Length: 299
Image (cartoon, rainbow, N blue to C red; front, side, top):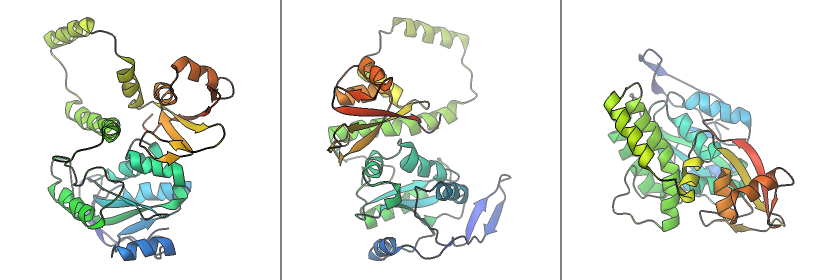
């Protein structure tokens, strides 16, 4: 379900600014979403519900592609929120990572596993009319800060946009942040260095350093594997269907994990045991049921 987009300034492929008046879909949110919006006095630019439907997902990706601004992911069951921002052309990427890829906010992903996509809404609360880049995003972060302070979103780990200075995290939260943030850091660093070549002397020094390195510990290898853009996703649940604590400390009946090393570490067995189970009925240690879901986003 989509609320009409207000007028926006967007940038086309030739970087020419144009004015766009876009109206698509119903202009009325569901009663449960409208109640949440009213309680926070929000008048969004656009709203999507029924995120479990492929046509809705495709529509979001199409509409938000040229936008820069602040978005909110809303849990329609309990009203909990996640506030995020995206530079021009990146909102669709954020939307997909948080709600479908499992490599955005770990708290949002855990909630989706518990409630299902049908109980979430994606809301664009405000957009910026000019081109916004990673290097020129001060106004965007200020705008995001405003909504974080106003809405006090439960799914946000840090209390301020783009800044965790002075905020102490739990150890398990630090681990989740490390895994989820590293993918975006790789993307940013990769864009800075893409197309550059190294001097032969530098390459030789790197080769010598690599030869001197010891083998990678299993814990580090699991993290590297989990952040791979070709990582496999696996659904883990208990055989009897009972609830258990996810890596984020949330009680769930199933959880989606990236890669076999991560699954093995979570269950408390070796990788060979998991691989052997996947070739048969997926039962591990007579307690856990593991199902292969396919490749994660970016593969």
